[in-house]
Image (tube, rainbow over all chains, first blue to last red; front, side):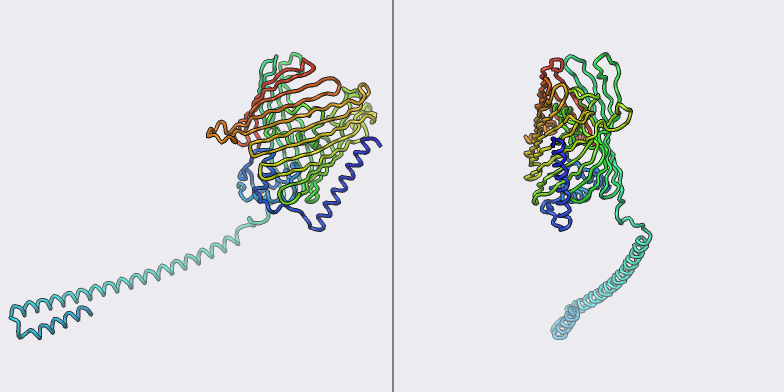
Length: 95
Length: 434
């Protein structure tokens, strides 16, 4: 087995493991969500590490929803945290 | 009552003392009695007037109350009418949304031994289309105007429009998002976080030259939260077309990291070799509190690159970032790649970079110009694996005109074993994120 085959095998196993674990979490409802931190705190923790602060009033609620879908994927923000951040941004969103 | 008492008292006194008083005194008392009677009449008139006033006030109050009740009834009717006539403005928001974000840059530079110039203008929009709550299309473009770089006499400039990435993202569940298309590769974190208004130094670190920035394929990625403090383990696994050869040979100089899609010698538009590359990254994000965090990640990718499908290209990247307060940032990457070739055997392009930034607002000086400035420094080095070593020291600043409008300036000290490339640079850049 050359390195490519080894790497591909490991990647495949990792991918399958991730899917299985995530399905298991989804079925049992045991979602280890970060509920103690507020949306504002999670926003500062997750967003400020890569870029300057953006103000909630810069976007409409619908735009924040689109942006959070983008940033959740790009910055790999856990789903529960992304939802809290979105709620925080939409509360003070522009019209 | 008081008046009557006075009158009776006066009469009594008058009767009792009538026999004893003179006519003059009697007349005085009579006058007093008349005065008292007059005062009594005036009091009666005043009481009557007050009674009339009270009656009038009660009437006005009753009328006002009637008017208020009538107004309330009208308002209620108006509300009912409005509720019946207004469309469902408070219903659920539209599922679809389209928006544009991105950044734009203008650069002015001076390279040692050359004239200074406005070197580059870049407009980099990202189109985002949310089809549903789980499906997002995103495409990032670079529209660039750049001065001629042919190496010979070139009086013009070049325009280019390129697709940086274009993907369909599908949120499978809370832990898995499927990304398909031309995607930025998670080899380290730089590619995914390198927009002009994110990167505090205008150009990329040197070792990024030995890695592909994007690839066409399929990726699974997501994050698993750890505890309730914001910690998360992040992951990405993917398969992409991978690197290829610019010719039908596998010499070191033929490696093309840009992607295994091209025109075969038979004229077919297809992958130049049959095997895709696979890769992945796993990371750990540990925040203590807002703006205090650490992130570590390891990533790799491997696949064949030549048309013969028998020469391997592999990469390993270690990345780290540290934030201590809102004002201090430290980040870097170590990159190592292995390339099998016909003419150099297996060679190892590699390098590393480290970058620090400190926002002078942390000094808490009452000077707005200073408070809006961040000092940055970077060291980066690269070995191409076949004899050339380059290292660079960069010192600079970012002046934050607003939170998304930056004016950056940097001076780069360049050392290179190939002396023709050892030219220092001065670069200024205006960056805007939108």
